[in-house]
Length: 113
Length: 113
Image 1 (tube, one colour):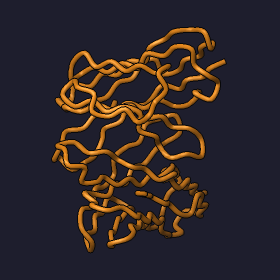
Image 2: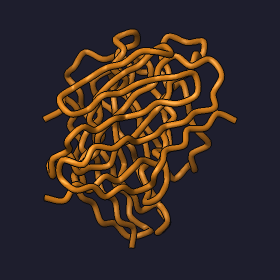
Image 3: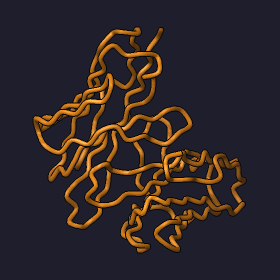
Image 4: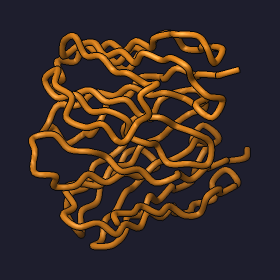
């Protein structure tokens, strides 16, 4: 069964303390891996798409990397406004022109000033 | 504003009521989705519509009835719900091949009393 596991469930950092979130997946036919950010009471907001092992993408203090079995979201010198739930999702080669996203449970990040 | 608008933002309904959730997108996307988000659980895919045709029903109880009159609008009709149906209901849209996954709405927070 296809599965997406995120760790840790919750992470508390001090402002400026860098760290990484993990997303491991056991799927066949990976089409892409997605990172989203979700603020309380809002829908997920797209951050990155990664397609192949070795790929990296950056946006401000965030950097996403991908291997054949997992992805990391690195947060460098975080600020309180980076506090949110970070969701990982995978899309599969389902044979059609559209695709489904399978999500992990997310990591709740809290950055204290 | 994400480009996907959901109404209402909050809904409280009794178990014998009938209500509808509405989703609208003007991004020109051809696929629309309903997801359910409950505490401590991953987002659960409910329905997928591709060019107005339902292409997936993820074993959703019949008390949830989707409707997609055109590629821009999606409804979720609710009747005889149970308290365990209380959750955040998220609508999303996508355009195949563009690589940024889904664009989500802000969701409808549903409480069944």
